[in-house]
Length: 106
Image (tube, rainbow, N blue to C red):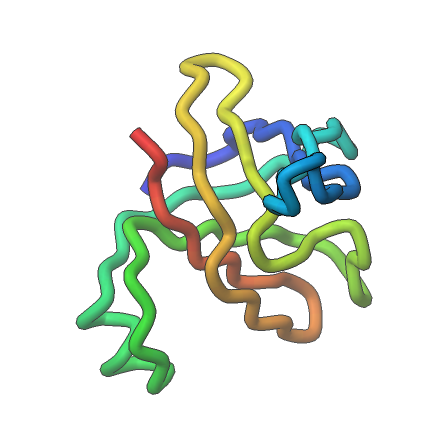
């Protein structure tokens, strides 16, 4: 487990339709930095322990109280030291922390 790692949280800005009618996804917008502990995880473990069949590479443990409305599925987390990017695929909230199941975009 990698502890006390800071990630920059990004969310996609509003998208739009171009002149050809194709949907263009908005650019990522910085929201805030969060400190998490990262643990390797995979699809089989997620299915066995939680019952979700989603392709993931890591679990991030985010300690906080209450609901953090800034964090959502499809948001992007970037490690501020290495630049590694992760897409949030599943969020499970507990009393004092949240499990963020992510997929590495490398």
